[in-house]
Every structure is written in structure tokens, then in C-alpha cells.
Length: 164
Length: 193
Image 1 (cartoon, each protein chain N blue to C red):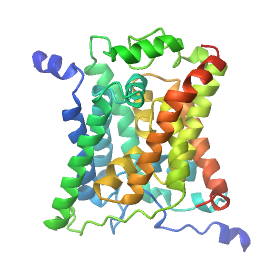
Image 2: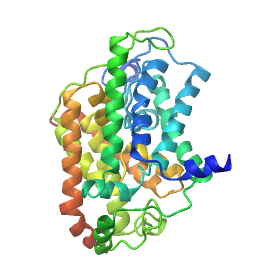
Image 3: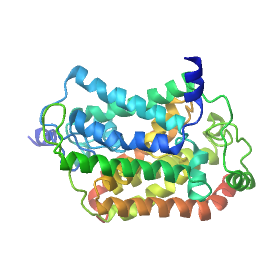
């Protein structure tokens, strides 16, 4: 019986940082739109040189405005978009009300955030650019990705023992 | 058409790229109530491949398939951009950065990534250990501990005016500044630059 208990799988993970809040499951070709959106996103990443290790160095050395301009204007666009969605009560294409969970403060945002910052400066990549770097032909970044997966796994393994 | 390809093959300025990235937030919400966040894909891959009975990885990852397809798309987009829209010129880096990095031992400034670091020949060396293994581990461990990365916190979270995301972003930056301005030089010397 113990084995069976272990295999209980929760369908909706409330702890997911990037949750899927659609009430129905996405089926088959419906998922294709996320692939297309990701593809556009990857093209922007490369064409604006956001995946470049040099651009991240410039940013942390305060020697170029480029990355601050990218992140800053992305945030302003995001703020305006979410305000419009909320105020105009814009629905999803399936007619559902748009749901956004609040982020809950945890110590992890300080400690984990700091740890990620160290890694961001070394690799020149946050998780998104890792995938774009690999696609752009920097195949050795596969090793970085596997190591990032190992880091995620180790966090998961010890999550309940870490201060949070 | 050729002129158009030539035009978009030039590096895109921040005021084009930034708003396009920002529009991913409403696009995902409107297309299917999805909250933008890329580092979660790493967790879903762990949940799919090596859950090992760990509660943190025991959930229906198939419900988050959209996130995995999104990052697959990011990889495909990277391929398309360098294959069909490649910038014929070398990357233009700030002169100050180029001077700083040259002093640290970087010699190749022609591409998006310096071949001094990002090549397979460095894999089993101290350079590879630092830049791929340690760097990657810190990214994976740190983002999950922080509950998000640049996309989930800095863009999605702050767009939704969430102060915990602002705190996370501030600490991303503190970690990055400390590494770049203080730790990078001794670490690079240690690994043989």
C-alpha cells in the first residue's frame, strides 16, 4: 500500500511558479501555439543578443544600457498589459477569466535569488537563454543545462530542509 | 524581400526586443491562462525524468506540457535566428567591457559567446567546471529556491506589481554584481585564464 501512496500524483500543483490556470487540459494541437510563441521568443533572444555572455557582462559592469533597456521596457509593457487585462476584464480565448496568483514572500527569494545571480554572471544566461544558446549552436551549453537540472533536482530533494 | 531580411538580420535594439518580450506576458495569459516563467521548465523536466519519489517532483507534469513546448520553441527560435537571420557583422561590445574582459584573459570577441570559454575542449578542465558545471548548478538551484528567474520574477512578477518578485530581482542583481565585479577575477585566475 505504501508504494501506491507514493504514486499519488496531484493534478494541479499549487506550488508551481509558472502555473497553468486554465480549467480544462490543453489538448493536442492546442499546445502548438506555445511552441510557436516560444519560437518567436527565442528569435528575439538571439536577435537582441540577450543570449550573449558579453551582454550580461556589460550589464553587471554597468557599461551598457542595452540589457537594462530590454528588461525595463519588457516590464513596462507587462505592467500596462496586465492593467489593461484587469481593468477591461479581458478573457482568455476560451472565454475564461484570467487568473494570476500572487507571489508569496519567502526567504528563498533572497537566498536563492542571490545564488542565481552568481550563476547568471558566470554562465551569462538565465534559464531562457540557456535553451536559445543551445539552439544557436553553442552545443556545449547542454552541459550547463544538465547542471542546471541537477541544481533544480538537488533543491527539490532538500527543499524542506532549507530555510524558507 | 532581401532588403527586409538584411534589415531584420541586424541586431535588434532594446526598444524593439523589450516590448516584444513584455508582450509574452499577456499572450500567455490570453492564449490559455498561463503564467510566464521559464525556470519552471527545469522542474518539469526533473519531474518527468527523475522524480525519485521526491514530493517536490511528484505532480502531473503533463499538465505543464505547454511550458516544455515553450522552451523547446526557444531553442528552435535560436536555431532559426542564427540560420536565417544571422548578423553578418561581429557583435559590438562596449569598449570598456572589452578592455575589462581582455584583462581577464578573454581573446575572442567575434561572436555572441567567447570561444575562450564556451567550447567543448574546455569540458573536462577547471574552466569547464566553473563555467558549465558550477555556473549551471547555481542557476538551477538558485532559480528554484527563489521560485523563479528573470522571466517569472523580474518580468512576470513585477508586471503584476508583486513586491516579493522585486525583492528576488534585487537579489539576482546583487549576486550578479558581486560575481562580476569581485569574484570573477580571482575565479578566472584560479581556473587558468
